[in-house]
Length: 269
Picture 1 (cartoon, rainbow, N blue to C red):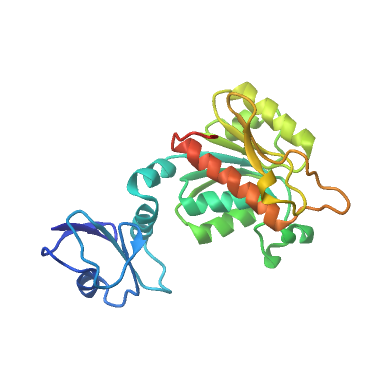
Picture 2: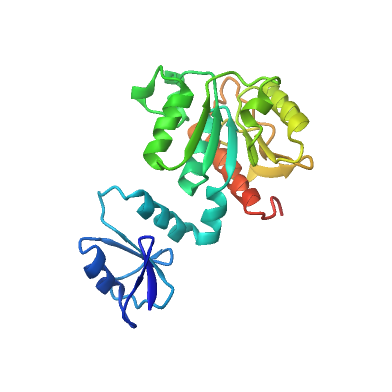
């Protein structure tokens, strides 16, 4: 029978168990995956199965990492995400978490724009580290994403996003993520992007402060190509700051919606 083992098609005897594959291919593998699920050594394989063998502590090759992503996401999903380009405007609490989530899911190209530096106050909710204080956010984020998935392409723009450069920065994206803090910046991006790419989905966020009930967070479609995530009321103010858990929930809702749109699935129920 023919199996795909760590991304390579190979022929094996019928009724082969995965522990036998391990013995022939990677004897010291300690994680065994068949068709996207972790299995026991005595798992019986069938013709056409996809097997991934992992040795903990070892960095996989590009081919092995690719096969791991395929195994976890299924081939059709992974291929479509790998071909996609997503723009992220703002790399603060929302944008940095969105970028990490999309890199982990295997989106092939991320267009990242932010003019700011990593500051101590960012560390309560943004995906940076103490030793990155003072670095440009686009550079710090690119370094972090490379450690997560070195095969994601990053197009970095260390500049302020303005109406006059929206098309130059984000003109080729398949989905756009708005991740600014200020309401005027959000409105500017929504208006400017709609003017140059009216058919491309834009996912904005509004109402993410504090630690309120998760059930208040939702996705709303407010235009043909515009979606807003959040409760649309909880703005940051004295006594209600921006905190990692709630900001992270909204960011991941934005990232999940981006994935759904890229896969052609309904955005809202």
